[in-house]
Image (tube, rainbow, N blue to C red; front, side, top):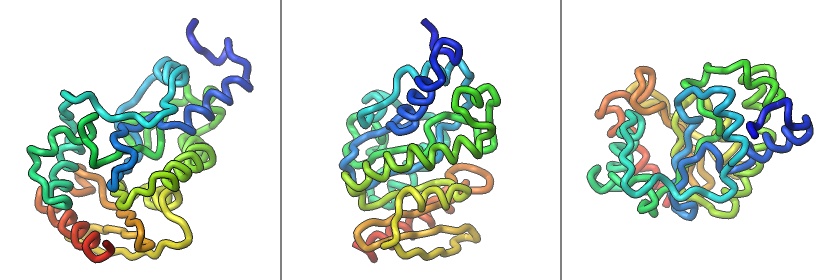
Length: 238
């Protein structure tokens, strides 16, 4: 039977949505015990109402192990991410071909919001009744209330040393999710673009512009320059 708003009681649908939000749904995964976490906003594609209802049937209660071993990402973001990590971690890009696959023991990757959208301004009004919201802003707020506490507990249990976040429009949400009152913050401009660093000297949270986007870090020079700064910050803290 197809899961719809009509054949589920409102209370049951609400519970299903909350369970979906408070899970690893929308995450690539990897090694949850890894020192380095990659934190993004959401998957960058639009889905339909039917797609969302299918996702509500099955959600990730256990941390996913990453892509299949033979998976090769073709996304521009992932290509830029490999370039950045090759500098930060002193690893050749060729050796990062298995990044985020089940063979990658050095990284764990999450998205702070589980539902894919083409960009942060995209929304589908057909989701309103399902999620019991009136806008994407309300959906984001629901995630802050339901999803963020789930991930805060995951973070407390696994203690990633370095969290690399991408997309400065979500800086406040990254800090709300990943930091507490023990963290100190500073910002710096590099090539006229801002990097934010938060640290409590046990963990580092870095927020960078989005990779391979016109308004973000688009060129190899920009990515490599930011990577050198992150590497320097890691040496300073650890």
